Length: 87
Image (cartoon, rainbow, N blue to C red; front, side):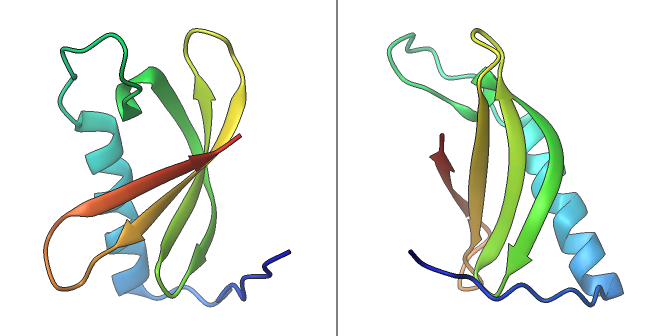
């Protein structure tokens, strides 16, 4: 079992970055393919942790109501986000 050390001290930069991540998750474009799961299939409920490589958000799948932890990796070399979800 991997244990992630979570920095509990919040800075203004962390809060701004977290706001950008949540905004990006909520406004991502809708995929045309019905077979592919997208972030639009989830309602972001709240941030639940943060670490050196990204943030984790609690989300609910809109169609089933199942809860997921969605990990968003912050890639500092570019302005893109990588999303991974765990049920």
